[in-house]
Image 1 (cartoon, rainbow, N blue to C red):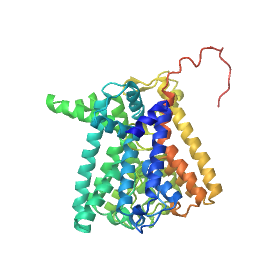
Image 2 (cartoon, rainbow, N blue to C red):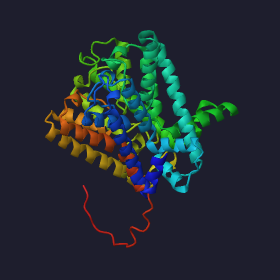
Image 3 (cartoon, one colour):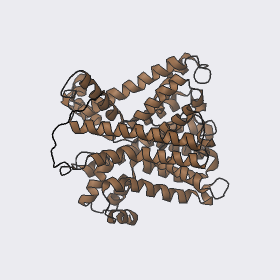
Image 4 (cartoon, one colour):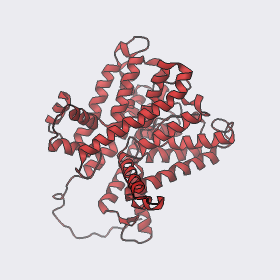
Length: 460
């Protein structure tokens, strides 16, 4: 708490404090992971390896240069799990939780910081929202761990099975994609309905956003009390919830059908599976590409067409105010809507009978533009310092920027400079959308006091 207080006393703006909190957590995590007690062999871990692991944990990415199951001791894995939980919720949210537990009062600055950390538009019921987020997170992760335990305890024993269940549940919900199951990771469970279903549900619940959670729960509860029909309950959902759920389902099932068709006869992915296995693993691939990073088959076996689809899904990512990364579903949909309304010569952008503000459209355009620019620059940088096929370099960078954690086998073979490029990509991917939206949300009323006459520019 003293550390959090010192950060606030530096007089940084929320736009600066949020990235700084992630950076500070990464540095502390790196120093701890370097300790011999965190290594399975009882040796000091190299600085770059510890830095990479701390970054991928805090940024809930999942790319690893050493095997999480083999390299790290129980203490090291526990540190990684804590970093994943902090990264999923955000350092500001965790620090605010500690302030609330210790009875500390929230100043106006604290509330503004927490609001920006969650990317909310209002301070109304902010502390109540924080409490619901934390309670919901631990309940869902707890249920996930219990369900996982029904599979892992019979296989690994009580102690090891329970630890694997807890680790996997937190990692899946936070969309981190790291595991301590064993050398084959999720590949051994591609035919296990419990493990596959629980993992996908945790990823989706973490990725759709907390605001959507609470809206669905509130409207469903109201519907039960007042005996509304399902259609009436759906109609009372907020426009944000409707957009997130509909677009997310379109991406998930559209991606499933795409991978099923493209990889149906590919023996390196799902080609040798049964029809049911192909369906389930295509669905799992579509879900996990939305920033989770778990996989049941090698990504290096994907066809070029499937790689292109993967780039798009990884770049879009999950939804706002959740644990997922990427530019977010709402952002991408608004960008598509902007193009559609221009082509259709419409003046207003309307979604579910609600008008979208021009400010929101500008934010969406800016976030996507900066995201594409970051991917472009970092892919070139990675190709220069670590010469690899462009297809693999782009997959690695998009995965890192989208905090996905999937790789075509490139991560362990990266050189020092390559690792640094990916570390930068993971960090920018985690804080980029949050910081950009917070930055673009600031009051800029005094920035354009001079009105110029309209120019004549030829576009297209």
